[in-house]
Image (cartoon, rainbow, N blue to C red):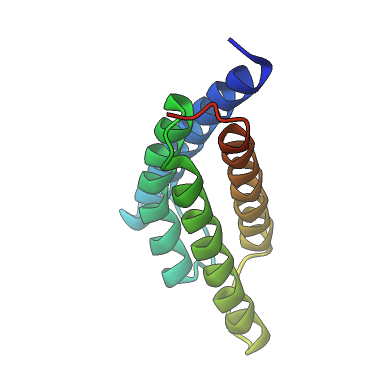
Length: 128
C-alpha cells in the first residue's frame, strides 16, 4: 500500500471514530444524560446529525471512494455555515459555552484536513 493509501485509511478510521463519538456525545446530551451547560440547540442537533455523516465520510475515505471528496467538502461547508450561524448567535448576546467555539474550530479544521486527504487521493488517481 502506498504512503497516500495508508494515510487515507488512517484518516478514514479516525473520521469514523470521531463520528461515533460525536453521535454518542450529542445523543447523550439530547437525551438529558449529560448537562453541557448553555447548549445552543441548532448547533447540538447539527453536530449530532453530522456525526452520522462523519461515519459515512470516513468509510468512503477508507475505501478510497470517489465520493469521499464531495462528502468531506459537504461536511466542511455545512460545519462552517453552522459555525458562522453560531458566531452570529454569540455576537447577538445569546448564551453559549466557550468549549463550543473550540469544538466547532476543531470540527471545521478536521474536515478541511479530511477533504485535503481525499483530494490528494483523487489527484494521485488512487481512488476508485
